[in-house]
Figure: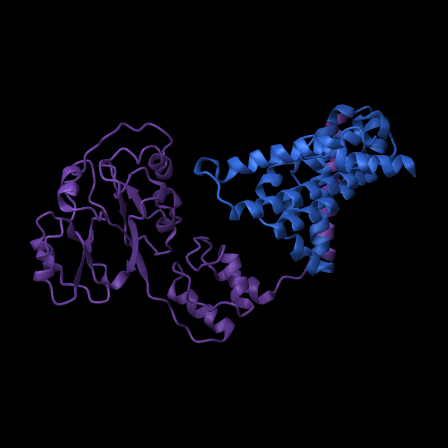
Length: 195
Length: 260
């Protein structure tokens, strides 16, 4: 229990995917203009990353390691994640139109999100996760929660920035990047908390 | 070897899985929307205000949009679509795009040598482009590349020209032009146009372009009442009440011209 608690705190706060590992920056800057879209994207990422964590660790354990094909990891994971997201999209459209509409365009966009691939590769390469499928899934899920947390925090900040007076040369992406840096600094205060 | 085999096998399996899932669990598309989608021109020009032909077909099928907003649809197709939907046909007024600028290489001055990215918006961001007039056509062809019908040609003298017979009036060029020099006007009234877009005073305009409107009002006097409108130093045709073609003869700058 303690092990998993540490794992989750570590993935959400200490080694936050966006703010400490610098993965998934494109959606972090792209869909953080409004809180509403940030929530949608966060939900979609949690959904896809949990699923892809499970499937890629299965692939790794039962396909890549027995065949000694570890160097094929990246390409296989991309293939599997992309196909998986497609299947999930079709199923969602059929069985839960509300969820499908809520996730919207973000679902297919996540296929190529480096945070998704990053979490899968971390699970496949780091010794702590070797062959542990449940642990890998929990880690991927927690990482996605960390991503969503960073996204929502950043979106809230940016919504307030819209209303504040910013010097002209700082408007738009510049102030967003400065803010992201300060946010990352704040998150570095969690260092040493988790595993 | 084994890596290629493995990847191929996994790829084929995934493709099969997607195919099977789509076949057995895929959401059924609206048959009406599908039929409409087949009838659409498929240019995806966006002139209807929707993201593309498929989007517009869906909107029509669900009753959210009326047929007739499509600028590139032939009358026959429109008739068929109206029959499918069971509504009366009403087509919007056909429009045509006009590049309101005479500033080709013979008329306007060049203040700079631009060899950056071949795109109007890019050129405009670099100190306003290479031409003297900051209101006219930059002539780098962003509109021509945006046009889904190939109706815009960039003349060798670096000014855009719309071919009215190819233009469907979708307005893509209008939204892409950073200078807002392309205007969408009613096709029926577009025989005579003012080919100048600059609101500057006449002396300022004359310094940079020998083909710009100087606001002399000769055309206004020659035309019938309310047929030519003057706004500051820029004349414009009143497309609701277009003047006769003969009015073009009085323009000293030759910027009030027949559509070519």
